Length: 416
Image (cartoon, rainbow, N blue to C red):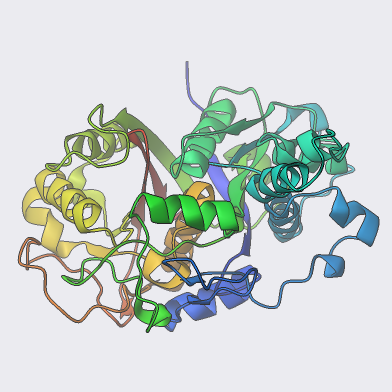
């Protein structure tokens, strides 16, 4: 069976450093940090008092008050970013076969704030179970693609992938395969997350996963730096329109990139920690290259998972050195989490978008906040430190890994 080619024809983003694609890219290339003191609740008793929140976000700019009350923030973010991507794609929704349009979305947690608030309200009461009738529909992780589908009448495959921080990368790979196999012409894919909450921050603090650099939040996310002390939690969404190449070509669509392949693997090692030698990460990148029909030396740039954790950064870079060998120093390696923080289930989507935009603009965004060399990291690697670097990017890889040992990798290629 001849697999169909798949391309990206639309992008949408709602991130801590930009509420649309243009402002997101401008912030990325200029090395802007999105980390700041938390405004959503009183942080006095919390170990970590900062996060990468959305800036200047008001749901009433997008939804009427009644509709906004029915949607958890993660679902709001999904609708907003997917709308931007659909508009960007130039799709005429009246002329497409909606039975051949799917929505495959990623969310690692889903409606955490809704769950938190409903349980706290119950606990504060007299024991009578007075729950909001929208509690369950607001909370469940699959409601985001459901709402996107309902809004636009898309009647193809519709579901959520849940693989912790790899969720939206898993979603993109599923979307790729539905189109490759001819089941869909178009898939709206991506991911969203809204875990900057009392429960989210408290839970990650209890795991000692978050940075506690409260005196300097804007520099707290510092992947590959020897003084890194944990990740910075972020929120938001990224959306991509994947489309069968001939379908896109026939309607004269703008094509950002071709999706060449995706790889999956499992660490099978620890609930939260990566394998110290990055065995599963080696395999996921090898699987992705094989799936794309590429050699290691074809890759120009890698947007790493790069969370700014002591163990994770070293393990990933060891894996890159092993997979790419003598070619590894020729690759621009970066971590845009240094700017956006870690968007959990939405990370794969916004980082894939960063990789695609790097190809379009021939510019690799920097890994900011790097000051102290880590002796455990190969000094020959180009980590794109502190300043964006100009270069032709024809093939870009995006890595995303999740608690539970979930590894996902996606490869994009510039159309010649």
